[in-house]
Amino acid sequence: MLHTSLYIGPGLGIGAGILIVLILLLIIFSFGYRLWFVFAGQSAPETTGDSKEAKSPFGLDFYLALLLSFAILLFSNPNEFVGQAQTYANNRVTAFPIWVTILIGLIIIGSLYYSINNIKDKSLKQRLRNYSFSPLHLVLVSVICLVTMSSRLAAWIEPHLSILYLSHVLIVLSGIVLGLGILWLKPLFFKLAKSSLGLLNQLLAENKDSKTIQTLNTASNQTMRFLAVNTFWLSVIFLAVYWLILEVIGATNPESVGLNWTMILLSVGATLPFLKTSSKNSAYSDINQLFHHLILDHYHIGKALLKRQIKGVEHPVESGAVSAVLVTGLARAGTTALVRTLSERGSFRSLDYSNMPVLLAPRLWAKFYRPSHKEQQERAHGDGIKVGLASVEALEEYFFKVVTDDRFVKKDRLVRHELSAEENEQYRRYFKSLCQGGEVYLAKNNNAVLRLPSLLAQNSDMKVFVLVREPLEHAYSLYKQHLKFSKEQAEDPFVLTYMNWLGHHEFGLRQLPFDLGALGDERDREKLDFWLERWIEYYSYAQGLGGVEFIRYEEFLTRPSQVVERIAKATGMTINAENIPVFEKTPEVPSGFSPNLASMAQKVYEGIG
Image 1 (tube, rainbow, N blue to C red):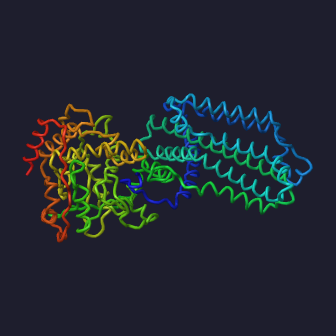
Image 2 (image 1 turned 120 degrees about the vertical axis):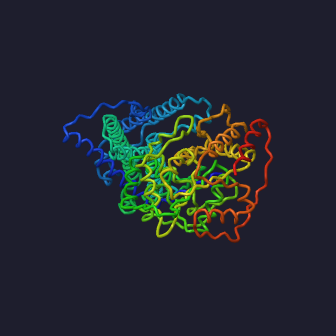
Image 3 (image 1 turned 120 degrees about the horizontal axis):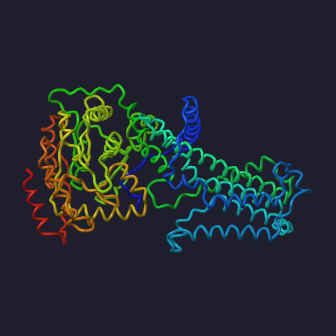
């Protein structure tokens, strides 16, 4: 299902290199931050411990895994870690006594049962689905089993098969254990990468007040903690595999396996787990999701990227010329179809999917990432519109979220707000930085109604077109999309996160209504009346705005060329309006709505001219 996701993220061929750089950055910044406090003669404030992770640095699994590692060391020969493999033929520790294996197995089973039994959701299926096995648990279990079996397998196989083959197989298995151990550390490594960027984000904050310094201290502590945990677990995994290799060589024939073959076979085994493709039902890989989080979660980093993007950009206002065209309206009013038609037929420049996730520095991102701009797949709305990396979308809203620090996003609604002169200046320089030569900036933004008065007042060279659709059909389309996206977001939470980043709160689990001064009483989003109220509130408010031109959705479907000609005349631009195909759309007849609301909506619709 999610292979038809609305959003198409860029491939991350440079992902591994970026993550390595992040690790270096987190070390530099974390230690640099602490040195800054020392040389500045300041003392770091105490952490607040607001988050769960801050209160509990290491969970039950960490301590149980640590206990297991100590148990292994206790019952093995410490000299194995420093001795030479050649000495193991005559002097080695035999496999674990059976009672030791049983004891360690019971500890492992007990710890897993304790962890699973303490999860709030008591359904067995959900508990097992939610539980993430500790890397040390699984790696150590594998090591114990292989070490215990090595000498027994040697004794059983030797009469039937060359012991050399057994050595090779066990070394490959050791490599598989190593690869799985590294893969199982992925969640911790992702936390390390996120915390390091969180620290960098706080260091880039312009306002260094006491609250920011406290946040810096918390981010630094968290980063160093994750670094320590990752280092510890990697060390245990490598030591466990090293010990396993020595046991295998000692149990078989130390002269039959040379160093070169050992490294080759180990490398082959360690590579195998990475060849398995993920069966996760998501349009985004784990590394892709991580990269989006690293960029889009951190507003201070975004502001630093924005400064680089708009540096030296001028935005003169020429008399009678249009520098920007904004297409807006309530979602599902045909804004996407109109914007795509205009972008294909006029000298426009817009943000598109290839700019994700570095939306505030698209010029910088373009130096590293140049994808093939081809149509790829139908978007998740299921409306027949195909999207690709060159598809224009509502991506500029992230700019407004960052520069305003989300001041218009409340817990249960989106509120009207004015753009300050400084914020509007940044906006003009931002969209001018995208355009070249005589290109005109073209944007689709359904949230623009929240700031339209201040946008129009400060940008005389901007043309705004508002699409309006027959209210019952429009409300029914919003209702269906809400049900569809609510289901998809429940199945893949990243879809919800993605939509939140872009300010898409039109429908889904995080639907937030526009508060335009007359918020209705209906709050049940699974009733058509809720969406009818949203329609009435939006277009009643939009009717009172000056400086906008309304376009009927139905007219655009049946007479698209005439609509494009109107836009060309209003903007003074040359736009090719010939042979635009008519959009086929079968009207749907909804039911289960309030006749009074439908009558009110129809009056508003008829009054929009």
